[in-house]
Amino acid sequence: MTKANDIPRTTLRQRIGSFVVQRQAVLRDYFSAISGSMGRLVFSLIYFIALANTLSIADFGLFATASAAGVMLSRTLAFGFISALYRTATIRPRLIGSYTAGFLMLAALSLPVLVAASALTWFLFFSTSMPAAIFAAVIFAEALLWRPVEVAMIVNNGLGRFGRAAVLAILTAAIKAAAAALFIFWPSHTVGAWAGFYIASNLVSLALAFGFFYPRQRLRLTPDLYWRRLSDSIYVAGAEVLFYLQMEFDKLLVLAMGGPHLAGIYAIVMRLVDLTAIPIRTFSMMLVQRMMRMPEMLARLKVKVGIEAGILIVSTSALLFLAVVLYFYPNFLGRNVAEAGPLVGLALFVPALRNLVEYHAELLFARGQTLIRAANLAMLAGLKAALLSLLLMRVADTETLVWMLNGMFALLYLASAAVTYTALRRPARAI
Image 1 (tube, one colour):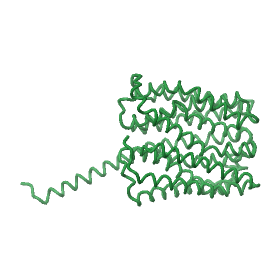
Image 2 (tube, helix red, strand yellow):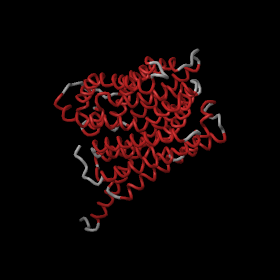
Image 3 (cartoon, one colour):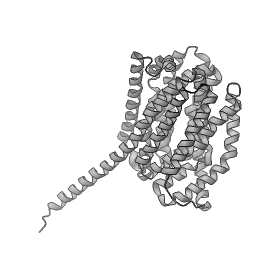
Image 4 (cartoon, one colour):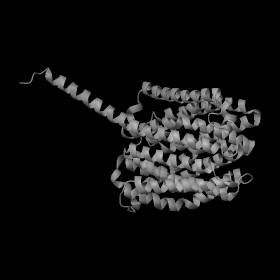
């Protein structure tokens, strides 16, 4: 006969067992995903070192700025329908075939918008410094070759196949690193010559992603499904363009106001900042998935503060470590990078503040508050453009400019936090 006091003990044991199993699953998924980030970080660093020290600093600045424009413009592909595809993979995976067909259809329809936006960007920022054909090649590689590779990673992450997404991330980063290494031995080291290598590396990555990593489902056009999601997707596309505008517009401004050489120095510093953010993005991606399923998880102040403090500490520590290495070993990342090396430590808090603004955008996406997210990013883009333009006009030396970026990004963080946490007080939107 079972004793009464044995029932609570059994229940407690079951609860503890369930808790441990759940935490083990979360840790397993996180380490699968972070392995991809760390592998990608290693190959991205190799790619960066090879390219930054093969191109001249001015040409590297031109390519980095054109690539940043391509990343921004690629968010118009399929009018943002990638967000609907990601939600489908996360919540209703049996519909991936239908939503993939919708993505392909909308991608074709979005091409005139992409071409027009690219032409306008070239005219405003690159017409005096880069031939249209080279700029078009970089945009083609970023928007029509690399962006679909990201779609394959996004869908695998949505399905919980973090290991497959991690392997794809590592392999594609290795392909780009190999292209940059081969470019060292190419007789011409111009940005035009590199554009050909860049297209080839992204084309190989695209074939790999859809040949071996994309889930196999029959493509079925189901327009009724798409129209319900299209308005939300357009909000997301606008928000994504605005997000990358406020992330990358600084490179365009530095090129326009400071010239290719200053743009190259600035691009090197910000690329090193970006590399420290790769592991943080993995954490944000998994947190967003969890929030889609459990919108109430950020109700406690302790959790909110803990997450932001963790992002701050990890991001700052990573850049501090890199700054110390470059201080004692200036040529550790190559001759061209050594010229920008002393500036890295001056941007100490920039990675954390950028990562926190990116985290705020992910929170609003997870909650389905896409319109507020778009408005927040538009506000940040305008504020960043105004502040950076003021700095470029008032500050003469590069060291002071980089140091004052900490204050600029602090203001952007405070503005983003005010909008985000005010919005989070509202009920989460049904997804």
